[in-house]
Image (cartoon, rainbow, N blue to C red; front, side):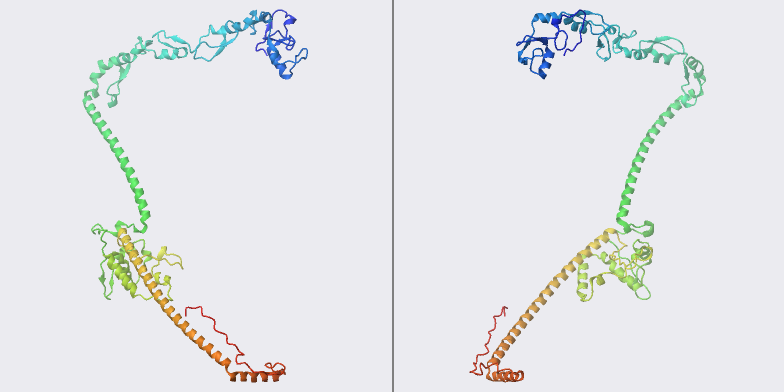
Length: 513
Protein backbone atom coordinates (compact mmCIF):
# COMPACT_ATOMS: atom_id res chain seq x y z
CA UNK A 1 0.00 0.00 0.00
CA UNK A 2 1.21 3.59 -0.52
CA UNK A 3 3.34 5.06 2.22
CA UNK A 4 1.79 8.56 1.88
CA UNK A 5 -1.83 9.64 1.98
CA UNK A 6 -2.40 12.22 -0.74
CA UNK A 7 -4.93 15.03 -0.55
CA UNK A 8 -6.04 15.66 -4.15
CA UNK A 9 -7.15 19.18 -5.03
CA UNK A 10 -9.23 18.60 -8.20
CA UNK A 11 -11.77 15.93 -9.10
CA UNK A 12 -10.27 12.61 -10.21
CA UNK A 13 -11.07 10.97 -13.54
CA UNK A 14 -12.80 7.62 -12.90
CA UNK A 15 -10.57 5.92 -15.46
CA UNK A 16 -7.55 6.69 -13.27
CA UNK A 17 -8.97 5.01 -10.17
CA UNK A 18 -7.94 1.54 -8.98
CA UNK A 19 -10.93 -0.79 -8.70
CA UNK A 20 -9.44 -2.33 -5.54
CA UNK A 21 -8.52 0.68 -3.36
CA UNK A 22 -10.73 3.21 -5.22
CA UNK A 23 -7.84 5.71 -5.28
CA UNK A 24 -5.73 7.02 -8.19
CA UNK A 25 -3.14 4.56 -9.42
CA UNK A 26 0.14 4.40 -7.54
CA UNK A 27 2.79 2.56 -9.50
CA UNK A 28 0.19 1.07 -11.91
CA UNK A 29 0.52 -2.43 -13.44
CA UNK A 30 -1.54 -3.90 -16.33
CA UNK A 31 -2.45 -7.56 -16.92
CA UNK A 32 -1.46 -9.18 -20.24
CA UNK A 33 -4.47 -11.51 -20.34
CA UNK A 34 -7.37 -9.11 -19.74
CA UNK A 35 -5.75 -5.63 -19.95
CA UNK A 36 -6.98 -4.37 -16.56
CA UNK A 37 -4.87 -1.87 -14.60
CA UNK A 38 -4.33 -1.88 -10.85
CA UNK A 39 -1.98 -0.45 -8.26
CA UNK A 40 1.06 -2.62 -7.91
CA UNK A 41 0.61 -3.28 -4.19
CA UNK A 42 -3.13 -3.83 -4.55
CA UNK A 43 -2.89 -6.51 -7.28
CA UNK A 44 -0.06 -8.34 -5.50
CA UNK A 45 -2.04 -8.49 -2.28
CA UNK A 46 -5.10 -9.73 -4.23
CA UNK A 47 -3.09 -12.51 -5.90
CA UNK A 48 -1.93 -13.69 -2.49
CA UNK A 49 -5.56 -14.61 -1.74
CA UNK A 50 -6.73 -15.84 -5.17
CA UNK A 51 -4.95 -16.34 -8.52
CA UNK A 52 -7.61 -14.63 -10.62
CA UNK A 53 -8.42 -11.20 -11.88
CA UNK A 54 -10.48 -9.16 -9.37
CA UNK A 55 -12.68 -7.80 -12.19
CA UNK A 56 -13.54 -10.72 -14.54
CA UNK A 57 -12.32 -13.67 -12.39
CA UNK A 58 -10.07 -14.96 -15.14
CA UNK A 59 -6.96 -16.92 -14.18
CA UNK A 60 -4.07 -14.61 -13.36
CA UNK A 61 -0.55 -14.96 -11.97
CA UNK A 62 2.27 -12.56 -11.20
CA UNK A 63 3.93 -13.51 -14.47
CA UNK A 64 1.00 -11.97 -16.33
CA UNK A 65 1.64 -8.50 -14.84
CA UNK A 66 3.55 -5.74 -16.60
CA UNK A 67 4.10 -2.01 -15.94
CA UNK A 68 1.29 0.18 -17.20
CA UNK A 69 1.55 2.47 -20.21
CA UNK A 70 3.75 5.55 -19.54
CA UNK A 71 0.83 7.77 -20.48
CA UNK A 72 -1.21 6.39 -17.59
CA UNK A 73 1.74 6.89 -15.25
CA UNK A 74 2.13 10.49 -16.34
CA UNK A 75 -1.56 11.22 -15.88
CA UNK A 76 -1.64 10.01 -12.27
CA UNK A 77 1.73 11.59 -11.35
CA UNK A 78 0.62 15.01 -12.61
CA UNK A 79 -2.45 15.14 -10.38
CA UNK A 80 -2.45 18.18 -8.04
CA UNK A 81 -2.10 17.38 -4.33
CA UNK A 82 -1.68 19.35 -1.11
CA UNK A 83 1.21 19.03 1.39
CA UNK A 84 0.56 16.33 3.96
CA UNK A 85 1.72 18.55 6.84
CA UNK A 86 -1.45 20.40 7.87
CA UNK A 87 -0.18 23.92 8.56
CA UNK A 88 1.60 23.91 5.22
CA UNK A 89 -0.62 25.13 2.32
CA UNK A 90 1.73 24.21 -0.50
CA UNK A 91 0.13 22.61 -3.63
CA UNK A 92 2.07 20.74 -6.31
CA UNK A 93 2.01 17.71 -8.59
CA UNK A 94 2.01 14.34 -6.88
CA UNK A 95 5.40 13.42 -8.26
CA UNK A 96 6.93 16.62 -6.74
CA UNK A 97 5.50 16.22 -3.24
CA UNK A 98 8.31 14.05 -1.94
CA UNK A 99 10.91 16.58 -3.02
CA UNK A 100 8.92 19.34 -1.31
CA UNK A 101 8.83 17.42 1.94
CA UNK A 102 12.54 16.74 1.88
CA UNK A 103 13.81 20.20 1.05
CA UNK A 104 11.35 23.05 1.40
CA UNK A 105 8.48 22.17 3.75
CA UNK A 106 8.79 24.37 6.86
CA UNK A 107 6.52 22.19 9.00
CA UNK A 108 8.37 18.90 8.81
CA UNK A 109 10.37 17.79 11.92
CA UNK A 110 14.13 17.91 11.39
CA UNK A 111 17.11 17.39 13.78
CA UNK A 112 19.23 20.27 15.04
CA UNK A 113 21.77 21.31 12.39
CA UNK A 114 24.58 21.16 14.99
CA UNK A 115 26.22 17.79 15.05
CA UNK A 116 26.42 17.36 18.83
CA UNK A 117 22.74 18.17 19.50
CA UNK A 118 19.99 15.53 19.32
CA UNK A 119 17.03 17.94 19.61
CA UNK A 120 14.14 17.62 17.07
CA UNK A 121 12.36 20.77 15.81
CA UNK A 122 10.43 22.13 12.79
CA UNK A 123 12.43 23.33 9.83
CA UNK A 124 11.08 26.88 10.17
CA UNK A 125 12.34 26.99 13.81
CA UNK A 126 15.77 25.63 12.93
CA UNK A 127 16.58 28.86 11.08
CA UNK A 128 16.32 30.99 14.25
CA UNK A 129 17.30 28.24 16.70
CA UNK A 130 20.45 28.87 18.74
CA UNK A 131 21.68 25.51 19.85
CA UNK A 132 23.56 25.30 23.12
CA UNK A 133 26.09 23.08 21.39
CA UNK A 134 26.89 25.69 18.78
CA UNK A 135 30.35 27.26 18.73
CA UNK A 136 30.53 30.88 19.96
CA UNK A 137 33.42 33.29 20.47
CA UNK A 138 34.45 34.87 23.77
CA UNK A 139 34.34 38.68 23.50
CA UNK A 140 37.39 39.09 25.79
CA UNK A 141 39.92 36.51 24.66
CA UNK A 142 38.32 35.60 21.27
CA UNK A 143 38.53 31.89 22.07
CA UNK A 144 35.82 29.63 20.62
CA UNK A 145 33.73 27.63 23.08
CA UNK A 146 30.31 25.99 23.05
CA UNK A 147 27.33 28.13 23.95
CA UNK A 148 26.50 26.29 27.19
CA UNK A 149 30.16 26.68 28.35
CA UNK A 150 30.36 30.41 27.67
CA UNK A 151 29.26 31.54 31.15
CA UNK A 152 31.76 29.28 32.88
CA UNK A 153 34.45 30.47 30.54
CA UNK A 154 33.74 34.11 31.35
CA UNK A 155 34.17 33.48 35.08
CA UNK A 156 37.59 31.98 34.40
CA UNK A 157 38.74 34.01 31.41
CA UNK A 158 42.03 35.70 32.28
CA UNK A 159 41.36 38.67 30.00
CA UNK A 160 38.06 39.57 31.56
CA UNK A 161 38.22 42.73 33.70
CA UNK A 162 37.66 42.41 37.43
CA UNK A 163 37.47 45.00 40.22
CA UNK A 164 39.49 44.93 43.45
CA UNK A 165 37.20 45.04 46.47
CA UNK A 166 39.69 47.08 48.52
CA UNK A 167 40.94 49.79 46.17
CA UNK A 168 38.17 49.55 43.49
CA UNK A 169 40.78 49.31 40.75
CA UNK A 170 39.92 47.41 37.56
CA UNK A 171 42.49 45.05 36.05
CA UNK A 172 42.52 41.80 34.04
CA UNK A 173 41.77 38.65 35.94
CA UNK A 174 45.25 37.34 35.11
CA UNK A 175 46.74 40.10 37.32
CA UNK A 176 44.47 39.44 40.26
CA UNK A 177 46.94 37.43 42.34
CA UNK A 178 49.79 39.90 41.86
CA UNK A 179 47.50 42.84 42.68
CA UNK A 180 46.29 41.20 45.88
CA UNK A 181 49.91 40.79 47.01
CA UNK A 182 50.67 44.47 46.41
CA UNK A 183 47.39 46.29 47.02
CA UNK A 184 48.01 48.88 49.80
CA UNK A 185 44.36 48.86 50.89
CA UNK A 186 44.11 45.12 51.45
CA UNK A 187 43.71 44.06 55.10
CA UNK A 188 46.53 41.73 56.14
CA UNK A 189 47.94 40.17 59.32
CA UNK A 190 51.38 40.66 60.78
CA UNK A 191 53.99 38.27 59.30
CA UNK A 192 54.71 37.12 62.88
CA UNK A 193 51.13 35.99 63.44
CA UNK A 194 52.13 32.34 63.83
CA UNK A 195 54.58 33.39 66.55
CA UNK A 196 51.94 35.26 68.57
CA UNK A 197 51.44 38.73 67.06
CA UNK A 198 47.75 39.68 66.83
CA UNK A 199 48.03 42.89 64.73
CA UNK A 200 45.67 43.22 61.73
CA UNK A 201 45.38 46.22 59.36
CA UNK A 202 46.03 47.63 55.90
CA UNK A 203 49.19 46.69 54.03
CA UNK A 204 50.29 50.37 53.84
CA UNK A 205 50.18 50.67 57.65
CA UNK A 206 52.05 47.37 58.07
CA UNK A 207 55.29 48.62 56.58
CA UNK A 208 54.99 52.24 57.73
CA UNK A 209 53.88 51.80 61.33
CA UNK A 210 53.72 48.25 62.69
CA UNK A 211 56.95 46.66 61.46
CA UNK A 212 59.19 49.04 63.39
CA UNK A 213 57.29 48.57 66.65
CA UNK A 214 56.48 44.82 66.52
CA UNK A 215 58.37 42.97 69.30
CA UNK A 216 58.15 39.66 67.43
CA UNK A 217 59.83 41.11 64.36
CA UNK A 218 62.96 41.84 66.39
CA UNK A 219 63.50 38.14 67.16
CA UNK A 220 62.37 36.80 63.79
CA UNK A 221 65.79 35.18 63.28
CA UNK A 222 65.35 33.10 66.43
CA UNK A 223 61.91 32.02 65.26
CA UNK A 224 63.33 30.91 61.91
CA UNK A 225 65.97 28.71 63.61
CA UNK A 226 63.37 27.38 66.04
CA UNK A 227 60.95 26.43 63.26
CA UNK A 228 63.70 24.74 61.29
CA UNK A 229 64.75 22.58 64.25
CA UNK A 230 61.13 21.84 65.07
CA UNK A 231 60.59 20.64 61.51
CA UNK A 232 63.60 18.32 61.78
CA UNK A 233 62.31 16.92 65.09
CA UNK A 234 58.85 16.37 63.62
CA UNK A 235 60.34 14.43 60.72
CA UNK A 236 62.37 12.31 63.15
CA UNK A 237 59.30 11.70 65.30
CA UNK A 238 57.35 10.53 62.25
CA UNK A 239 60.15 8.13 61.37
CA UNK A 240 60.41 6.86 64.96
CA UNK A 241 56.65 6.45 65.15
CA UNK A 242 56.71 4.27 62.05
CA UNK A 243 59.53 2.19 63.52
CA UNK A 244 57.63 1.76 66.78
CA UNK A 245 54.54 0.63 64.88
CA UNK A 246 56.64 -1.86 62.94
CA UNK A 247 58.19 -3.19 66.15
CA UNK A 248 54.76 -3.47 67.75
CA UNK A 249 53.59 -5.53 64.80
CA UNK A 250 56.64 -7.79 65.17
CA UNK A 251 55.96 -8.14 68.90
CA UNK A 252 52.35 -9.08 68.24
CA UNK A 253 53.48 -11.68 65.73
CA UNK A 254 55.99 -13.08 68.21
CA UNK A 255 53.32 -13.19 70.93
CA UNK A 256 51.02 -15.16 68.65
CA UNK A 257 53.83 -17.57 67.75
CA UNK A 258 54.81 -17.89 71.44
CA UNK A 259 51.22 -18.61 72.39
CA UNK A 260 51.06 -21.29 69.70
CA UNK A 261 54.30 -22.78 71.04
CA UNK A 262 52.93 -22.76 74.61
CA UNK A 263 49.78 -24.52 73.46
CA UNK A 264 51.84 -27.09 71.54
CA UNK A 265 54.28 -27.76 74.41
CA UNK A 266 51.60 -27.88 77.09
CA UNK A 267 53.03 -28.92 80.49
CA UNK A 268 56.62 -28.56 79.28
CA UNK A 269 56.33 -24.77 79.57
CA UNK A 270 58.14 -23.80 82.76
CA UNK A 271 57.74 -20.69 84.88
CA UNK A 272 61.13 -18.96 84.96
CA UNK A 273 60.52 -17.55 88.43
CA UNK A 274 59.58 -20.94 89.93
CA UNK A 275 62.04 -23.17 88.03
CA UNK A 276 65.23 -21.10 88.02
CA UNK A 277 66.67 -18.27 90.06
CA UNK A 278 68.83 -15.38 88.91
CA UNK A 279 72.01 -16.79 90.48
CA UNK A 280 71.43 -20.37 89.27
CA UNK A 281 73.36 -21.24 86.09
CA UNK A 282 71.25 -22.55 83.23
CA UNK A 283 72.17 -26.13 82.33
CA UNK A 284 73.14 -27.03 78.78
CA UNK A 285 70.10 -28.51 76.98
CA UNK A 286 72.30 -30.97 75.12
CA UNK A 287 73.78 -32.53 78.33
CA UNK A 288 71.04 -32.95 80.96
CA UNK A 289 72.35 -33.27 84.49
CA UNK A 290 71.19 -35.92 86.94
CA UNK A 291 69.79 -34.46 90.17
CA UNK A 292 72.10 -34.90 93.15
CA UNK A 293 71.06 -37.41 95.80
CA UNK A 294 71.55 -36.98 99.50
CA UNK A 295 71.69 -39.68 102.15
CA UNK A 296 69.20 -39.38 104.99
CA UNK A 297 69.49 -40.89 108.41
CA UNK A 298 67.77 -44.11 107.34
CA UNK A 299 70.43 -44.76 104.71
CA UNK A 300 68.06 -44.32 101.76
CA UNK A 301 69.10 -41.73 99.14
CA UNK A 302 66.55 -39.02 98.33
CA UNK A 303 66.25 -36.06 95.98
CA UNK A 304 67.26 -32.57 97.16
CA UNK A 305 64.55 -30.16 98.25
CA UNK A 306 65.00 -27.95 95.18
CA UNK A 307 64.16 -30.85 92.88
CA UNK A 308 61.13 -31.68 94.99
CA UNK A 309 59.90 -28.09 94.81
CA UNK A 310 60.28 -28.13 91.03
CA UNK A 311 58.28 -31.34 90.85
CA UNK A 312 55.59 -29.84 93.07
CA UNK A 313 55.29 -26.78 90.80
CA UNK A 314 55.31 -28.85 87.62
CA UNK A 315 52.04 -29.17 85.67
CA UNK A 316 52.40 -32.98 85.66
CA UNK A 317 53.02 -33.19 89.40
CA UNK A 318 49.48 -34.54 90.12
CA UNK A 319 50.43 -37.66 88.15
CA UNK A 320 53.27 -38.40 90.61
CA UNK A 321 51.88 -38.34 94.17
CA UNK A 322 54.25 -38.15 97.12
CA UNK A 323 55.23 -41.58 98.50
CA UNK A 324 57.90 -42.93 100.82
CA UNK A 325 61.55 -42.29 100.11
CA UNK A 326 62.22 -45.75 98.78
CA UNK A 327 59.47 -45.58 96.14
CA UNK A 328 60.47 -42.03 95.20
CA UNK A 329 64.07 -43.09 94.74
CA UNK A 330 63.06 -46.10 92.63
CA UNK A 331 60.77 -43.97 90.48
CA UNK A 332 63.48 -41.33 90.07
CA UNK A 333 65.84 -44.04 88.91
CA UNK A 334 63.25 -45.17 86.35
CA UNK A 335 62.64 -41.57 85.22
CA UNK A 336 66.34 -40.87 84.91
CA UNK A 337 66.64 -43.59 82.28
CA UNK A 338 66.36 -40.96 79.59
CA UNK A 339 69.46 -39.23 80.96
CA UNK A 340 71.83 -42.13 80.41
CA UNK A 341 74.90 -41.04 78.49
CA UNK A 342 75.01 -43.96 76.07
CA UNK A 343 72.22 -45.63 74.11
CA UNK A 344 74.20 -48.93 73.88
CA UNK A 345 74.46 -49.20 77.67
CA UNK A 346 70.75 -48.53 77.93
CA UNK A 347 69.88 -51.23 75.38
CA UNK A 348 72.21 -53.77 77.06
CA UNK A 349 70.83 -52.98 80.48
CA UNK A 350 67.21 -53.27 79.32
CA UNK A 351 68.03 -56.52 77.51
CA UNK A 352 69.63 -58.00 80.62
CA UNK A 353 66.66 -56.92 82.68
CA UNK A 354 64.31 -58.52 80.16
CA UNK A 355 66.28 -61.77 80.20
CA UNK A 356 66.08 -61.91 83.98
CA UNK A 357 62.29 -61.52 84.00
CA UNK A 358 60.21 -64.69 83.86
CA UNK A 359 56.92 -64.65 82.03
CA UNK A 360 54.01 -66.51 83.64
CA UNK A 361 51.04 -67.84 81.63
CA UNK A 362 48.43 -66.53 84.02
CA UNK A 363 49.70 -62.93 84.04
CA UNK A 364 48.14 -60.51 81.54
CA UNK A 365 49.87 -57.78 79.58
CA UNK A 366 47.80 -55.00 81.15
CA UNK A 367 48.59 -56.20 84.66
CA UNK A 368 52.33 -56.21 83.91
CA UNK A 369 52.56 -52.91 81.99
CA UNK A 370 49.92 -50.60 83.48
CA UNK A 371 51.35 -48.74 86.48
CA UNK A 372 49.01 -48.66 89.45
CA UNK A 373 50.79 -45.93 91.35
CA UNK A 374 51.02 -43.34 88.55
CA UNK A 375 47.57 -41.79 88.73
CA UNK A 376 46.75 -38.09 89.12
CA UNK A 377 45.61 -36.76 92.45
CA UNK A 378 44.07 -33.51 93.56
CA UNK A 379 41.70 -31.35 91.52
CA UNK A 380 43.02 -32.78 88.25
CA UNK A 381 42.47 -36.39 89.23
CA UNK A 382 40.37 -38.44 86.77
CA UNK A 383 37.23 -40.33 87.67
CA UNK A 384 37.36 -43.57 89.61
CA UNK A 385 37.77 -46.68 87.50
CA UNK A 386 39.91 -44.97 84.82
CA UNK A 387 43.61 -45.86 84.79
CA UNK A 388 45.96 -43.29 83.28
CA UNK A 389 49.32 -44.61 82.13
CA UNK A 390 52.08 -41.98 82.20
CA UNK A 391 55.34 -42.46 80.38
CA UNK A 392 58.46 -42.48 82.60
CA UNK A 393 59.65 -39.00 81.62
CA UNK A 394 62.17 -36.80 83.36
CA UNK A 395 60.31 -33.55 83.86
CA UNK A 396 63.46 -31.78 85.11
CA UNK A 397 65.14 -31.89 81.69
CA UNK A 398 64.38 -30.03 78.50
CA UNK A 399 61.86 -31.20 75.96
CA UNK A 400 64.61 -32.08 73.49
CA UNK A 401 66.38 -34.30 76.02
CA UNK A 402 63.09 -35.94 76.98
CA UNK A 403 62.26 -36.64 73.35
CA UNK A 404 65.73 -38.10 72.80
CA UNK A 405 65.28 -40.28 75.87
CA UNK A 406 61.88 -41.42 74.64
CA UNK A 407 63.38 -42.25 71.28
CA UNK A 408 66.12 -44.30 72.90
CA UNK A 409 63.52 -46.06 75.05
CA UNK A 410 61.43 -46.85 71.98
CA UNK A 411 64.51 -48.16 70.15
CA UNK A 412 65.48 -50.39 73.08
CA UNK A 413 61.88 -51.56 73.48
CA UNK A 414 61.73 -52.37 69.78
CA UNK A 415 64.92 -54.40 70.02
CA UNK A 416 63.64 -56.17 73.13
CA UNK A 417 60.34 -57.01 71.45
CA UNK A 418 62.20 -58.25 68.39
CA UNK A 419 64.49 -60.43 70.55
CA UNK A 420 61.50 -61.76 72.48
CA UNK A 421 59.72 -62.58 69.23
CA UNK A 422 62.72 -64.47 67.90
CA UNK A 423 63.07 -66.43 71.13
CA UNK A 424 59.37 -67.23 71.08
CA UNK A 425 59.67 -68.47 67.50
CA UNK A 426 62.64 -70.66 68.40
CA UNK A 427 60.85 -72.06 71.47
CA UNK A 428 57.71 -72.76 69.47
CA UNK A 429 59.73 -74.49 66.74
CA UNK A 430 61.53 -76.73 69.25
CA UNK A 431 58.31 -77.61 71.00
CA UNK A 432 56.66 -78.44 67.67
CA UNK A 433 59.53 -80.76 66.70
CA UNK A 434 59.33 -82.53 70.05
CA UNK A 435 55.57 -83.02 69.74
CA UNK A 436 56.01 -84.37 66.20
CA UNK A 437 58.50 -86.95 67.46
CA UNK A 438 56.15 -88.01 70.26
CA UNK A 439 53.26 -88.36 67.81
CA UNK A 440 55.38 -90.53 65.51
CA UNK A 441 56.30 -92.76 68.47
CA UNK A 442 52.65 -93.08 69.49
CA UNK A 443 51.67 -93.97 65.92
CA UNK A 444 54.32 -96.72 65.81
CA UNK A 445 53.12 -98.20 69.13
CA UNK A 446 49.50 -98.11 68.05
CA UNK A 447 50.36 -99.88 64.78
CA UNK A 448 52.17 -102.69 66.64
CA UNK A 449 49.26 -103.15 69.03
CA UNK A 450 46.85 -103.27 66.10
CA UNK A 451 48.91 -105.99 64.40
CA UNK A 452 49.03 -108.04 67.61
CA UNK A 453 45.27 -107.72 68.13
CA UNK A 454 44.60 -108.85 64.56
CA UNK A 455 46.84 -111.90 64.97
CA UNK A 456 45.21 -112.83 68.29
CA UNK A 457 41.71 -112.54 66.86
CA UNK A 458 42.58 -114.72 63.86
CA UNK A 459 44.08 -117.42 66.08
CA UNK A 460 41.08 -117.37 68.39
CA UNK A 461 38.54 -117.73 65.58
CA UNK A 462 40.34 -120.62 63.90
CA UNK A 463 40.85 -122.86 66.98
CA UNK A 464 38.55 -126.04 67.39
CA UNK A 465 38.07 -125.64 71.10
CA UNK A 466 36.63 -122.26 70.57
CA UNK A 467 34.11 -123.64 68.06
CA UNK A 468 33.04 -126.41 70.41
CA UNK A 469 32.56 -123.97 73.23
CA UNK A 470 30.57 -121.66 71.01
CA UNK A 471 28.36 -124.61 69.86
CA UNK A 472 27.67 -125.62 73.43
CA UNK A 473 26.67 -122.10 74.35
CA UNK A 474 24.38 -121.84 71.35
CA UNK A 475 22.73 -125.23 72.15
CA UNK A 476 22.07 -124.10 75.67
CA UNK A 477 20.47 -120.95 74.38
CA UNK A 478 18.36 -123.03 71.96
CA UNK A 479 17.06 -125.26 74.77
CA UNK A 480 16.13 -122.25 76.84
CA UNK A 481 14.34 -120.59 73.97
CA UNK A 482 12.88 -123.85 72.47
CA UNK A 483 14.61 -123.35 69.19
CA UNK A 484 16.38 -125.85 66.95
CA UNK A 485 20.06 -126.04 66.58
CA UNK A 486 20.92 -123.08 64.45
CA UNK A 487 23.96 -124.90 63.14
CA UNK A 488 21.93 -127.91 61.81
CA UNK A 489 19.94 -128.00 58.57
CA UNK A 490 17.02 -130.50 58.70
CA UNK A 491 18.68 -132.14 61.73
CA UNK A 492 21.75 -132.98 59.66
CA UNK A 493 25.00 -131.94 61.25
CA UNK A 494 27.55 -131.93 58.55
CA UNK A 495 31.23 -131.58 59.00
CA UNK A 496 32.31 -128.18 60.22
CA UNK A 497 34.64 -126.38 57.99
CA UNK A 498 37.68 -125.04 59.69
CA UNK A 499 37.17 -121.85 57.69
CA UNK A 500 33.60 -121.17 58.84
CA UNK A 501 34.72 -117.88 60.25
CA UNK A 502 36.63 -116.08 57.57
CA UNK A 503 39.52 -113.88 58.45
CA UNK A 504 39.13 -110.34 57.18
CA UNK A 505 42.49 -108.96 56.10
CA UNK A 506 43.53 -105.63 57.56
CA UNK A 507 43.06 -102.56 55.40
CA UNK A 508 46.27 -100.85 54.37
CA UNK A 509 47.33 -97.99 56.62
CA UNK A 510 47.03 -94.49 55.19
CA UNK A 511 49.63 -93.05 57.52
CA UNK A 512 53.32 -92.77 56.80
CA UNK A 513 54.01 -95.45 59.44
